[in-house]
Length: 193
Image 1 (cartoon, rainbow, N blue to C red):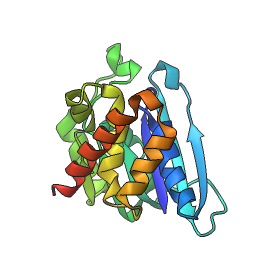
Image 2 (image 1 turned 30 degrees about the vertical axis):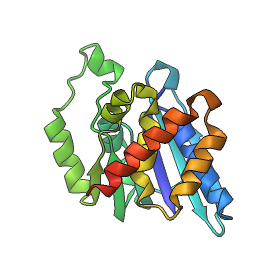
Image 3 (image 1 turned 90 degrees about the horizontal axis):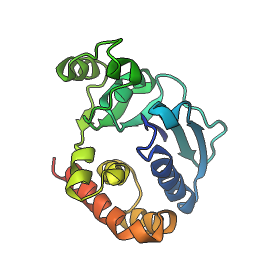
Image 4 (image 1 turned 180 degrees about the vertical axis):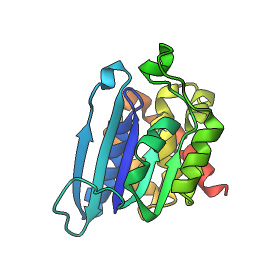
């Protein structure tokens, strides 16, 4: 399984990837993970490659071979869509975080409708998830990543209880309960269609 996760610094991409990796390890699979932080502290792109199978030799996903791309922001989905395999699934949040050149007015951001059309051409098997909006309703935007985790849980082979156990192990104790609620909310989103 090849999963590419993309987002912007501060969205919890690394924790999300750590939980998926923990699930695979706990299931007895070989796991390789690679992280690219770049200018994360300045709102830059953050990506992780997660690969798991009975045996994995490289942590990097080759272009055109990702089984799943999870994007926490629409522009990040478009930025990494070339990694998606022919039968791959794209799951992305339509939440917008404009990059610095757009924020400063140097570059104009395409309309969301245009971005969605471009994604539709490249990823016929795609799903939008209002993870950021759902996290806000739960009272904390920082659980967007856990909502996304719940949203993709229907498409991976791990049991629901394994996700809950991984969240309990890897999330700070004071926010475990909130993250479990966020996971449940995301899981409800993936089972509703």
